[in-house]
Image (tube, rainbow, N blue to C red; front, side, top):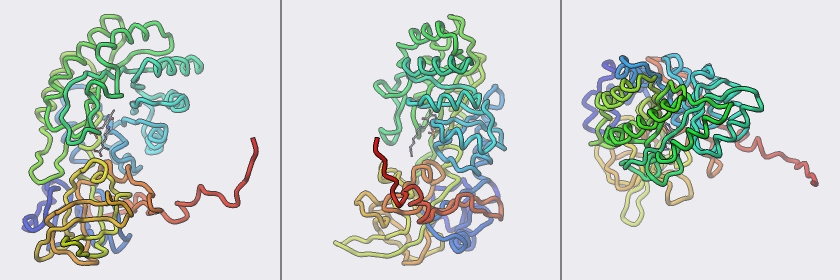
Length: 439
Ligand code: LLP
């Protein structure tokens, strides 16, 4: 993204979003060609702001790394399910990885076809499986024998053959910043334990309405190096070997998502070249089409949460910066003790050490503790960085707070791609007067 070069503001603000569409120009933070104060003035705060150019750049970087093997990138919709972001990724040539009927509907609404879709998740309902078959998804990833039997029954009823993949739990050690984002370790709810795969493959052979087209895995999220993959891929390849030997028409090998992005100063970006080298070698060995399910890598660094400082507060010897965004808008710090860089949108002289907190009535409603920050005042704008993934999608209405507006920037243009919720949106489902019934 050579056009978005950071100027000397970089040193005066904590900035971890170096290699993205966000940069300071003349002391003001811009998303590509648009100043963030202009967006705040147009649509208010809190606001999610996404850079289209960053999404494009990340997609190209990843797809270039796999250019010489047959592959398909299925964006994990849970990371950012905004229809305009999905459309942008579709136009780049991505497919999607979905985990619910709602995500399926979003994908179809954004113009994806069934064949662009792989359907993951441990708890698919009959209704969701029906919708997936109706849409003609590429693969339904099977996560248990019980689920397999339900897929068989639904497909039999519809008189179709369901294309399935087995999600293998390779049971390797996975290092992630938080235990909640590991999946490929022993004892997790995800996937079929590797020792149980052969037996499941035999069950599949006996079922007339499912066809095993792929095997896959997903080790976890925010994985910083290829080591867990180095351990896990031989186990996936072994399972593929067994499946082929018993005559299953396997076409796809799915290595899931999980590529890390830098959040904190000092974090290093995922080594895509190393990751690709390891994965490409395995894919070549099988001759199968490789499926990738990245979420965070494609979108995290494309977004910020723009928020206004409501108050400065000094209490019990501490400084607090109270923002108009809270944990209902960005829950990652509260839920995973996750770090998000915080920077002032306009240059501010001086520094403070403060807790940055939201307005919500929970002690867990903080974005940072004891963080060194620019000495901001009420009315100043801040950004919470690296907020394009698992940010808006995890937002809630807790404390009856409408979810923020979402704005997409593309070059020097910007548009609302998700309207700020209104009070009417919040109460729409709560009908009055009540229509009482008896059973
Ligand atoms: N495929 C499957 C089956 C997954 O479960 C996930 C993420 C992905 C792909 C995409 O993983 P990624 O490339 O984004 O790491 N809310 C947490 C992250 C949860 C990830 C869940 N699964 C967070 O905010 O860190």
